[in-house]
Image (tube, rainbow, N blue to C red; front, side, top):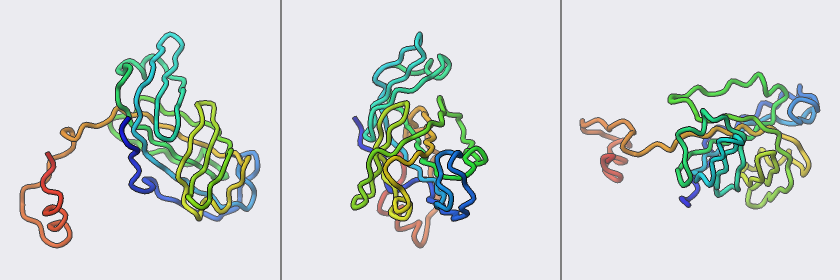
Amino acid sequence: MRRLVFGGILAALSTFLDGAGSGAAGGTIPGSPSFVVGQRFEAQVIDVDRAAGILRLKTEAGPLRLSAPEAATAPLKKGDAVVVDVALIRHPAPAGLARRHEEPPPLLTQRLRASITGIHRSVELVALTTAAGRLTLAVPANAIASLHTGDVLLLDLTVRVESEPAALPAMEAHPRGGLAGLLYMIFGRGK
């Protein structure tokens, strides 16, 4: 299993502090701060059951069992590497939040309700239970401060085929100065 692609929180932590939420909208508590926290994980396909429409993945955040139409699982087979983007959402109107549109489109996108089963504030981890499985996510301290065991949040899951480094755009060949030159000197040209 490849290591967790963590490198910090990928999606920005947004604190809106609008407090206009109601308890029914995605489990937000009136007056609680809103946020969206995202992470990216590498995952391995454990099983593809096209007849039942089930995709099972192994990630370092926990195993996932996702409902997937046959069209989404067609290019996948056991052992394939995929990338799972996870967005933990607390917002009074989560349906109004725009989703990112990226190319190529993801194989699968699901929005699930997630219940907090544990909070480890000292290491900034939150354990969640969803219909797809149990996950443990890193959540910044300023977002964890307003969370409690039993809170219900939303979880957006997006599954994509893992990009190969060769498929990334080539670097320019002209000399660089400043920080770009230093980074180019340290890491060299992408291969």
